[in-house]
View (cartoon, rainbow, N blue to C red):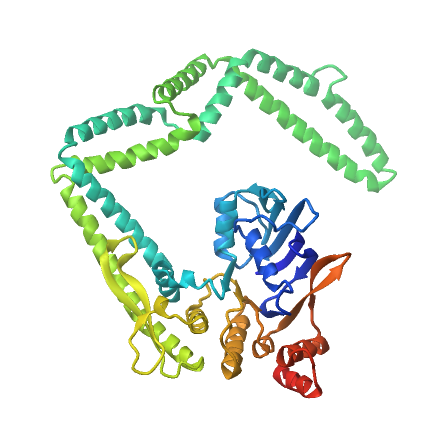
Length: 551
């Protein structure tokens, strides 16, 4: 959820600090006041490419920062973990754009690429504008909407893995006969490499431990002498030894305890210290003895290190690469062994295709069931949006096997009685497309979707009772737990349904146009809705109408 947005020196914005909450938020104001500038700024901090002319006149740079609460956004948290970026439930994105067009990006204070910012941004906010329905028109988006609606993400991921396995074997099979000898040579080489690797019993932890052990054995004389000197200081027969001094201190304190029992705690402390020092002495004795006669162990350690170094040098690997490489060798040996076995690659290919077909068929059945349900829900929602005889169908077209299964989703619609079902991209009216898009989003939204959604004047081309229904639908989206809906609108029927209402305006300050924004209270909100209803002159009747809308 978007928690705050800070904008400095951006187009006609001097400095804005905005805080937001969950629910439905409306942003209104005169045309040209700067409502869409807020969305443009947020888009930039979410990874959109910058253009020239966005730095405020006379300034060196623009700076945009957005904070998000992501404690409930598992996808965003997982992305941060995968990219080794620390987070504690809150996320800070920052973008600095210079007058020459260059920019810098930061995620939780760490430098990031624009692509990283964009990837993460897609998990945080969805932005829909009156001309941005193109994403909804893509077949891939339509498939994703259906799969998310049916909670099929894990099933799709499984099908992708099976397809990848089958496709890999299919390509191997095509080259099998003409490359058989090469496969045999590769398998022999891998087996030999693996045979040399196994006796090393290598792991990165063992390797580091072996090196520490080797260093200690190489410096045994110095270590033994140091240990013996330490033991002498701790417990020598000289009266100046630490143990003797501690004994004297203990005797003194015991005499004092007879005079003041509160000093007894110091006696106990000294006793504990004496025990610890005694244990240190015994440990050092054992340690020194273990080093004295370990020539055979040293030889064994040196031999292991040398064998490992020889192996790493031979195969041009680094120690931290060896474990991962060995796993790849094992996987490749298994695959080549299957291919070159008695049944060759054929059985493996047949089994892989069978596994894919079974899982893809199950996915098709689940999609078919979900498509019927989603079609009916969206059709009903379109009727609420004045498509009285409208009909929506999430059609599934059979395709060649792919990583996404055996079908492609295609959204079809008819907007009038007796009309032919056609792909939604054939719908020409922008107003119709806005309502269709809204119906699809409302019906298909799940708890796995991006938590913050921004609708930038998607209500263009509608009015009257339909506008009020659109407002109610947007309100229902905002009422979902953890959901955050922002709407830039010119329609009072929509703005009146919001939980929070911001007004955007522009003023002349020191000869420059500056955009400002304020969160409206009840009184100022009535005036703003009245302005949207009545235009320049606000009458008592208009104010009463505004109060009625807000109540």
